[in-house]
View 1 (cartoon, one colour):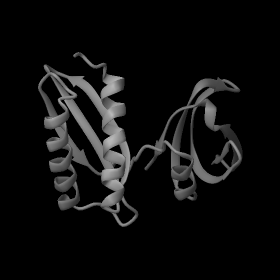
View 2 (cartoon, one colour):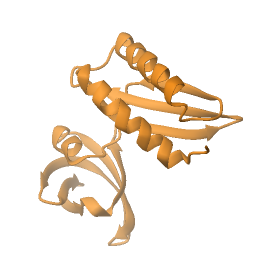
View 3 (cartoon, helix red, strand yellow):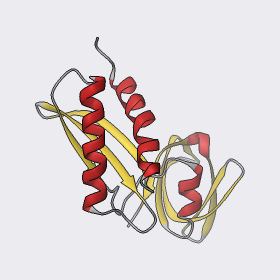
Length: 153
């Protein structure tokens, strides 16, 4: 049975999120994409004090064993488990709250006053808004309008 990439990602998220939580980790993101001549499954995990190689290896082994049993992916792929790095994606409200005071890059689905990408300091989260300080000006962005967001250097 051929399963689309969205279903593969959803199935892996459903399994990997509690697996990571049981180990004191957070599942940050799951990506499954074609690269070159093959497929790559990337799983990003994190915790406040950072992740170790042992954390990545343990999650990799558990997910690999689960995927072998579930047979969710019918073609060859390469599995990578790592931390999200310094430019970690911001996906949930909790991510924005956790990283208040840090620099972020936010891309909107549609331009706001002619601007599509905003880079500034995450000031606060209130209701359905992210408040970002850009060039000493506070800019309020609606969660629903965000296409992608990540920490910036």
